[in-house]
Length: 286
Image (cartoon, rainbow, N blue to C red; front, side, top):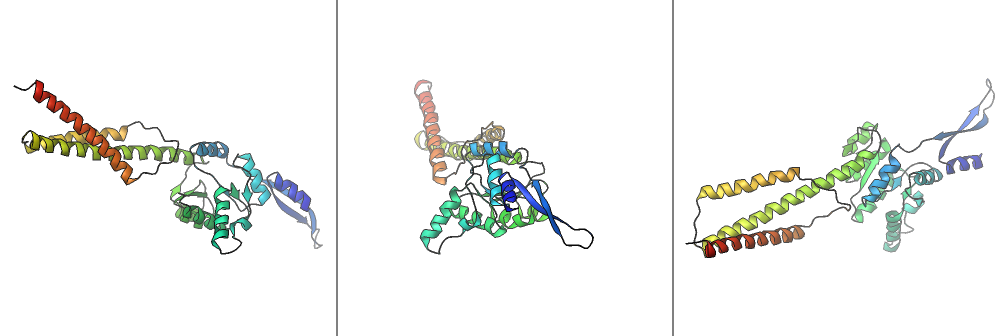
């Protein structure tokens, strides 16, 4: 019986033992009933796309270790599936805790886990500086969904999972997750373009008007300043419809990087504008 259970588990089957009895007689073992719980129809394709977007994917399941390894093989996730024992450090020393964290970081997944184990995996990855997303559908997934920065309740999830998650999929399969990654990266690029444009155009206008007032001793009516700001704001509207291509890598913006890029572009635009003014004063002025 154990050998048959092992053989079916390696092939990805869950098993149920079946017993029968006649009238009031004793139960007798009749056999093993194999049950296949295949991955969702688009899981393999979606995981390949997500990995291509440089997002690491791990499997955390309560199924038997052999079943977990077989399912991971079927969806090309990897076969380095660990048991709950690898989630516990040998001692409380920093060395053993760091070794356990490295195992969690590089493993392809975990099997035979409990809800607390899922919570621990997410906590370790977050301490490593990762932004963690978690998918789930059951009550036992709710703590991990709430812990992750991005909790995703899949289609058909329980009310507890939906309440704990940040995103609820209304469509069968996991492909909406990849779509969300692509859309969010395009939105990020539009927001980044808006911030850079807003700062650099402000730098250009401030430097330009100050230079005209101080160098050329020019004065401006308030209406012209208002119109200048209005026309700049109208240009920003086009950024919302700008066609952006999702980045192949996750982007982490830094304030200093945005300021340096914006100020460099703003000063360059100011120099170009002043060059046109100087040219007009030199060659086109009476």
